[in-house]
Length: 39
Image (cartoon, helix red, strand yellow):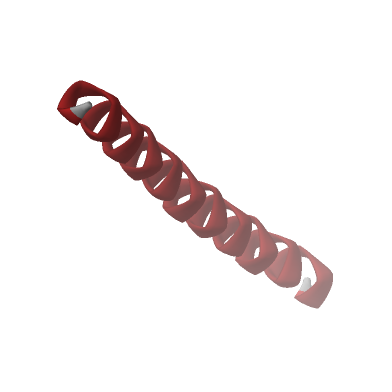
């Protein structure tokens, strides 16, 4: 049972990392678009 619990926790961590990476990526895209529209 411990192994299953660890797998679930790892899965949650990976999902959080993926979500934050996704947010950072979309934020970077917005910044790039703003930069190009300024110039």
